[in-house]
Length: 67
View 1 (cartoon, rainbow, N blue to C red):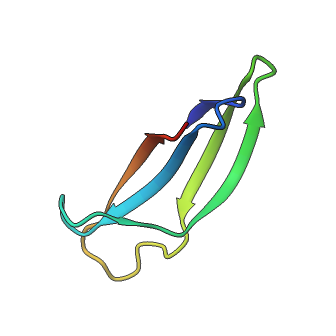
View 2: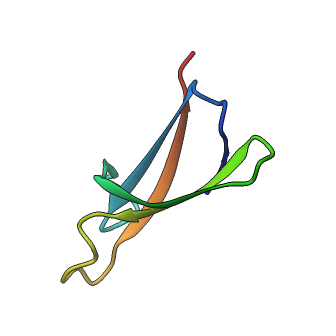
């Protein structure tokens, strides 16, 4: 994902589910962060648990504003 580096009032949460309901927060691992020298950065996240034996897994990025 690409985000602004000075946007400290936004909370980014990766959520997962085995169906398109019942979303839960996930323990994620930040794989890499790359600065673009324009006030933004690209962050690559991966699910820490992996897919394992689950036949289906859905991920979504939840962004919340917290002043």
